[in-house]
Image 1 (tube, one colour):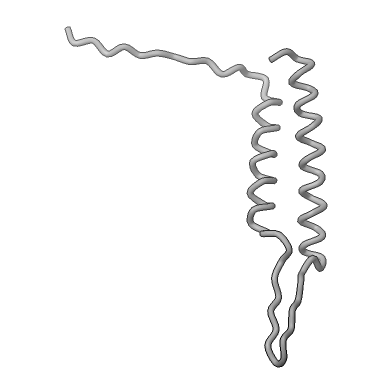
Image 2 (cartoon, rainbow, N blue to C red):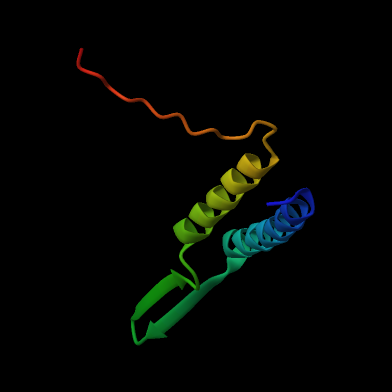
Length: 82
């Protein structure tokens, strides 16, 4: 992945992250649906809050790994029986 591609991907991830932050704020601020039938009522979020938070964490982790300066290197170990 070239440096330009990496920067574009980070920019897209940051935009998605901002959208997730806005959605989380909306949900915490009143994004709740309420239903009532007779004397019974039910209240629920329009989307799963834990799914939003998991997506935020995944995107933050991916951005951090893309912005890290060190390159990952594979190391192979060959056990030998002498």
